[in-house]
Length: 80
Image (cartoon, rainbow, N blue to C red; front, side, top):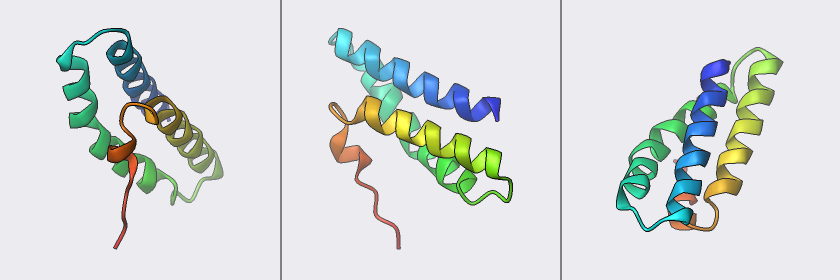
């Protein structure tokens, strides 16, 4: 469960660094890590334990709020 929180914090801090500077490395880190992170969060939303589902939901919401301004296009996820 701590990995889920660490993943959310890492993505949010990368997004904050990106907004604070024009460095492209922060942007590329977010872009590279966003899709795998979202896959992890969505997989954890289906976990049998309620605590894990709640933490995954909170982490996903935190990441979406942090990235909504700069990465709105990347956050539009379609599921087949």
